[in-house]
Image (cartoon, rainbow, N blue to C red):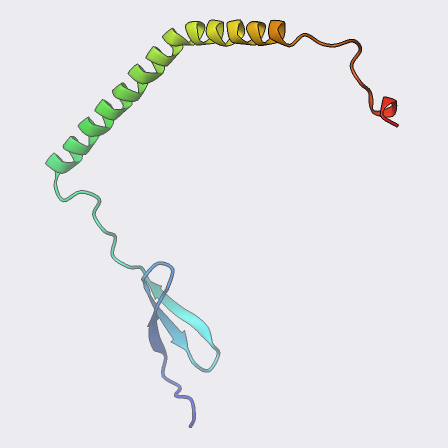
Length: 102
């Protein structure tokens, strides 16, 4: 079972292109790139995708604006809750240090 001197072609697992390989030297002689797939079928589909993307971006911006408006109220509520919790459980004396536990 001998090796043929003729180059052979295999498909590249990464890009899907065709590689021509020399069996004697085991090197790639040529590479033919795979045809690129079209992102959109026509210009109308591309325009619709851009409009959808714009609408999504505007929606996210409106949500972030609403969150910023409510941020002050939320922080005030959290602070009031922390103050209430601190008043309910006051500290008892000095804080313990690690070498106090020995």
